[in-house]
Image (tube, rainbow over all chains, first blue to last red; front, side):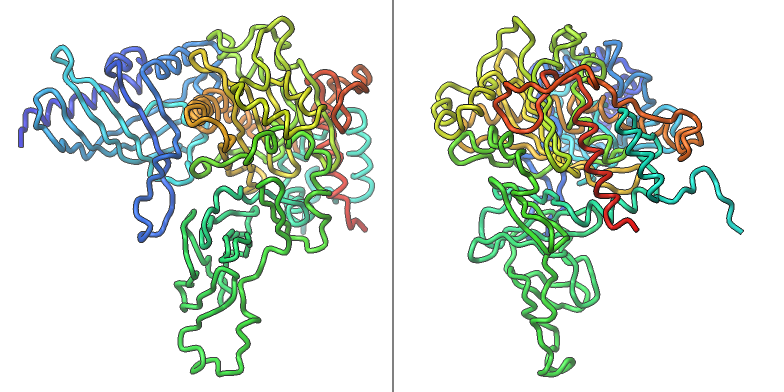
Length: 166
Length: 449
């Protein structure tokens, strides 16, 4: 166990969450490799005998750097109503497990997320939790996200939309 | 002692007449949207009597395949039997009512209740009772304790519907002339449409009529709610761009908007579908349908009470393609819905197109779609501002009326339109909204003393 590496990766995720929660989306894009695979399959309810409860061909997101950039540009228009007035968001990241550190410049990292969103004057908080499976790659001595799979825990999403980045 | 408030008003002949008069003037009382009493009447008079979408045949491929669905609050188990027939049962054990199967889908030979172990086969028959003979005796007639069938199950071109009213008119009669428009996408290619994966599901704090209207008759919202795509240069800047085409009002509250490209815009025929499929379209559609389809960019509409459909031309990175999304707006109360969204594409389409079309769908529609995420915000706001005294006053003292007047006395039906129904030569009209509410009111008024 490399404590220094764990610390470095934890810091990376905290920084990422800071950028997203402070709407520094362009800087967040800089954390992604140009060939990023950003994917969010659906969680389904199925019997244990039927195996995985992740439906790999039913998706919420199947994004490239280009399509994520378009989504960011959209948020900078004057009429992205889901995000204007901007909801307040909190990306909480925990259970960060570095799964394989064999190569110096590539890591598989598993982590849990809790996303909270406060919209307009609603006293209630919308929330979404789940797991992220990332591949981080070192590019020019900086960690970047080369691949992200977001697996929500809810089979029926309790959030009204997925206008956030996870 | 009970206090009579301006929200307490019996739904009697007088009130009905008043609503009808308003509707005739292109006005709809705002309180009707989320009134709790109206909601209960809707469950009883509409959702218990009309055809509701349950799923698509392509979701059930093998005998034993099942999916679980809801008809508002009734859990439904939809199964493919050993003979290939599709059956629908109340997904509730006949013994003590337990929700029998909670999985979204799967394959089974028998459904066993986890409470006391009663088990049912694919035909719904009770085939096993734990310690049966010893506790109930030989005389118990298992036939009497079979799963309760959804009274009516009928399909059209792969679309499976259920109806809780055993005396309801047939599905085909109910759909009526909507079929002519549905065939343009359901029947155009050999083998029809198929569902990819499982439906997306999410919760929005709005009323089911709000979303039904949005898909059924509201191309007018497009340039404003989806203005971000105009700003990005993805959608045309002409504020009339989603008006071009026809809005068609059909019987039983159904409605369709058939959009064409803006004048001068150069878009490929048949919604950008590949040329190798055109001969199928020509073979499977009538001349009138083909003429309409040739120029169509978007077909969007609603099948009363809570199914909508949207079949757009969609561009991403230079490629244009087309797909179908079906929506169920499942009411979870007067101010809450669960949205179910299916993605469908022609079985006969090239694999690459299927994949690109799916990417196009998730980038624009569903909870992650850049178009629909803004819709959800607006739908929520409609309900949010309808909770107060001024909105809910049933005596209309605050002019609490929606404006459904667009096109009234100004736009006449287009008699040259090749399709059935009453077709208006623009989609910026409120004829569909009024059609939805005419039928809605007719059903609410049924059995009135």
